[in-house]
Image (cartoon, rainbow, N blue to C red; front, side, top):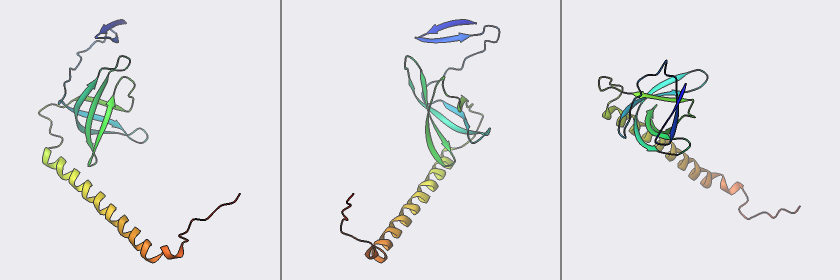
Length: 141
């Protein structure tokens, strides 16, 4: 084992099994391996949105699309539930229009759910609110 320091980041390298290190830049497409429940892992398309050059724990910032939801993840040496690898141009996991359709569908479901909750609240105020006391109750204890 050999310890190498690059730009303030210490790396421990086993020279017997050393391999090529991928270089990433903002905007690179990546495949995200995300741990779910138990021993299950899922693969989602993502993109690198930034780098945080923290002295103690350099971090890669990732945006990825999982189950019609746009998610963000900070990945560093302490991340044990998330991995990334480069996504080659030949791999077509998801196209832009499909991703936008998925997000629009999720937005529509959320808007419908919000409308339903507002309607239930209005119904409660109209039909049931009279059954509840509206003046404050003083608690003596």
